[in-house]
Length: 170
Image (tube, rainbow, N blue to C red):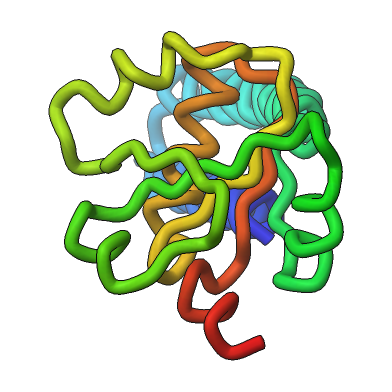
């Protein structure tokens, strides 16, 4: 869903840029042939440059996005519960201590997302393990999952959609 918005935003920016360039060309003085010729050359150059750059940019973003999809996965409560049964899985609770004290998933490691040493503690974890990450509603765990994969090099991170609130409803 994020990738589609990015492509749509790029497309709308490209259309806006093309419209701006074209309207600037139309408003050039008609009596000066040199200015119109130079304007036409700039218009064509701008259109060609925007098209090739945008295509390359979308391709690179798409490749990056595909790499991200293979490392972070948003999962529902049923999938989360099924994966918990595996011995190699580590459950990571990124809520505050007060939230954890109100109720937590059994066997979870607690690392408070809001603590200043959160990233330092994440670095100490095994990057090759599979992590099931959750918070209260799914927002902090999504951010933590992105941090783990994008910056810290974790290989397999799964984010619980809806967080502990969704888990408690099951």
